[in-house]
Image (tube, rainbow, N blue to C red; front, top):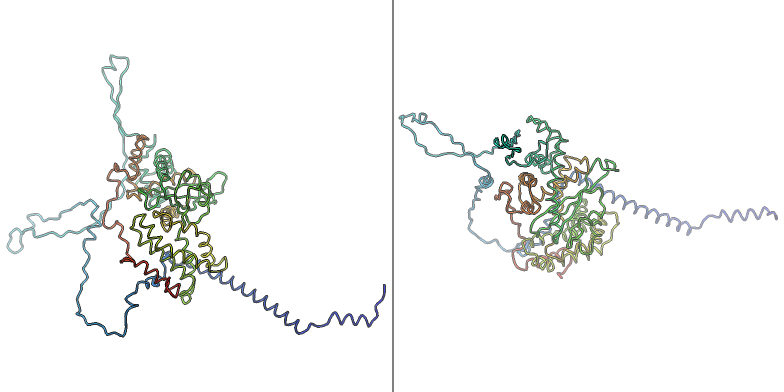
Amino acid sequence: MQLLRFNDIIINMETVIQPPTIDQNIESLKAIIESQAAQIAKMEALIKHYEERFKLEQRRRFGSSSEASPNQIRFEELFNEAEDQADPTLPEPTYDQATYKRKKRIGKRKDDLSALPVERVEYELAESERACPECGEIMGDIGVTVRDELEIIPARVVHKEHAVHAYACANCNKNNDRTPVTRAESPMPLIPGSLASPSAVAHIASQKFVNGIPLYRSERGLSYDGVELSRQTMANWLIYCARNYLMVIYTLLASILLKGDVIHADETSVQVLREPGRKAQTKSYEWLYRTGRCSEHPIVIYEYHETRQHEHAKNFLEGFKGFIHADGYQAYHNLSADVTVVGCWSHARRPWENLYKTLPEDKRDGSNAERGLVYCNLLFALEDEFRDLGPEERLKKRLEFSKPVSDDFFNWVDSLGALPKSLLGDAITYMRNQRKYLENIYLDGRLEISNNAAERSIKPFVQGRKQWLFSCTPNGAKSSSIYYSIFETAKENRLNPYQYVKYLLESLPSAKLSGLESLLPWSKSLPDCCRVPDTPSNTRPKRRKLYNEKGRLHQALLKLREKYFDKTPK
């Protein structure tokens, strides 16, 4: 090995430790600044993301659950022609002041009480008490003052004995080898060897599945009336009657539902404690299917399953051909080719509404969130206008007025860019992924703009779940599905839930399969006690008309485009 000289070593060391030039320092600093700027931008985006999520969670916890848009005034400005065309420089016209006094509404209480039976109690003075204090003559009746009250009679529990008499021939008993015996006719027992009656089971079921009262509270309430009836016995009654009687009505309703052309679907979680091979904390699911608004008879069907897999929807909807409203869940997109999925514009509107309400008030005007809400609000306003039209006319109006709005909406969404996990990114992603399903509303006039019908029908189950919390066994969960289906279908057909189920339990033990159609909720042969009387207070009011003249819709659309989206109307 050749040894290096000392001078060579010094030269080599100077070369190694030579300081960087000024240009190299500048380039290094630029790289550091760019790296830090990128990191700062990334952190700012992350902070904005967490701020949005925090504000959204705060609004969900402490804010109003209503989805009413806070910027409705912006939509109402579309119809301020009088203000836009007014000239403030002109003098005000002279006019004669007219007095107007608002009339007091009378008769509402009478309308509210018109469906109730009346018991009139007369309060009169005896003839001896009607003597005039001045002259002693008998005073005549000059009028009566009527005061109304509501008297509520609580449920009364009665021990009912069915004494069935038997008759035998004394002569045959004395002279013949066999004695004929005849028994009086009596209704069949609901549950052999049990205290259960149709009224008792219907009362317990309606308390739990209509009023949301758990069985342990019903047990405690009955004990106050001197009835010792355990919750386990009540649960056994409910399961037995659902499996042996009400199941046939449930199956018949489901088969009729599948023969229709439009179905709304939704699902929610439920906890079942004793499912084989599963932990008590594992979520199970309640699936819901119901008819559309244009169906002849409304039907609501609940179905319990352990999971949320798409096979459950596929099995239930086997043989169905038509349209199914859904909220974007992928399980409904894997059905047969005969099923067309229709998206929900309420779910499409929700991310824009969430984004709008998380923005500071001074940044809402002109924001992307406001623009998205304006699009959605106009589509829903148009649907309100078309609500009373027939299916064919409604479809024609949608294609003429709503379709251009949604086309502009999707074109604008495609031009936006946002971080995938931001609220704006969520809104954009949902619109893009669901576009082909959302636009299916333009295929048939019987379809609806949203899946709110299913969400309204599943709400009673969700509210009840907050009270009774869980089902103990799968049999109990399946029975709950049957009761909820029959109760909600009865309510949709304007029946008294308790009276209808009581009538079913009275009729089904001796009913024949060929006569089940007479027991359906829309049957004309149902007794009057099952029907809810029509009164002015429970009839649905007419919707407010947004457009009063022919062509006003088109003018409103042009004005909206000009005001919010374009400088010149298209």
